[in-house]
Image (cartoon, rainbow, N blue to C red; front, side, top):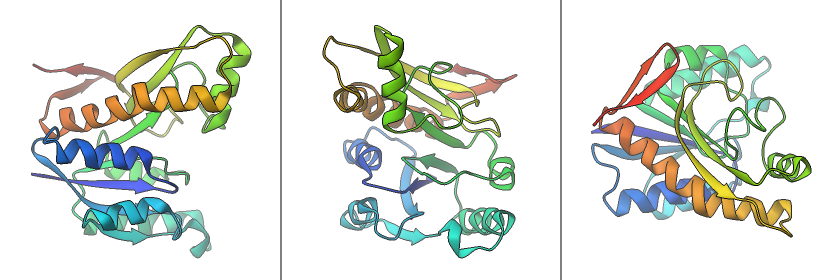
Length: 208
């Protein structure tokens, strides 16, 4: 049974999708054992507590230097025996130490079809604002491994979502969450826990 550690900062809707999938028995050979927040007031912590999941808080501003924070987060994840780390709306940048320590063991969900509308500064509503400005007819979400390039790690799963006439960034954000993010993030986690993701030269292969 793999230990899944989920990193959060806000409301925790993607965390809830993972908890619900776990309750439905969809995540075989894996269990969410700890939720770590960068924000002590994050509602995601309440969601975790309601599910009986252990919680921790680690804030970047409590460390004088970024390297100290990077080392502390790495140590905390190792202490929790993390087999898989899931970024579910985690708004603090990960350092190279933690990324190297857990290579191809950190999964992020991005609210666009990478390589579109991704990279530094592309998070939250801005992703959807830029998609609408560009006039794309299809957007979606991407579950991917994390490397040292922002949104640049190996892609695991993508799911497309229709852009409709009259969409606002908030409406589109909600549709992408409901139709893509909440579906493919638990699926990617399940595939990892069943050892069904193979990474070769930065490309993933989903094994039968």
